[in-house]
Length: 112
Image 1 (tube, rainbow, N blue to C red):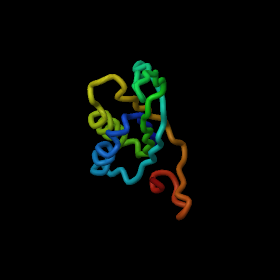
Image 2: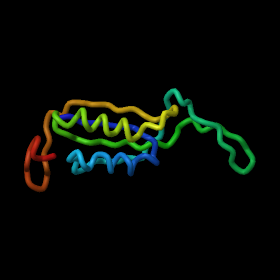
Image 3: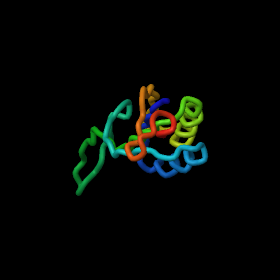
Image 4: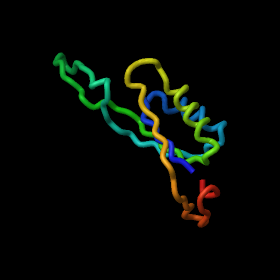
């Protein structure tokens, strides 16, 4: 099993979710986060005053998937979240040693 973590632009969330559903992804966790990378923030104007926003709003998606789905999930997220502009985000893939569905006690692959 793998944990796929993607940091993307917030307006791409619904498109990414819709792209993952046909692949068999039954659930995901979404967290609103802030961060910066090469984008280095941006300048905004509020009530006539210009100020620097260092941390930009992003969305973190976490999806636990079976090993055979990892490549398809990563590709779907990358293709859907890509705008071609700086700040599109990142995708990380990590090993998951164990999973447990609390309600039923199912473990590992059947818990996904």
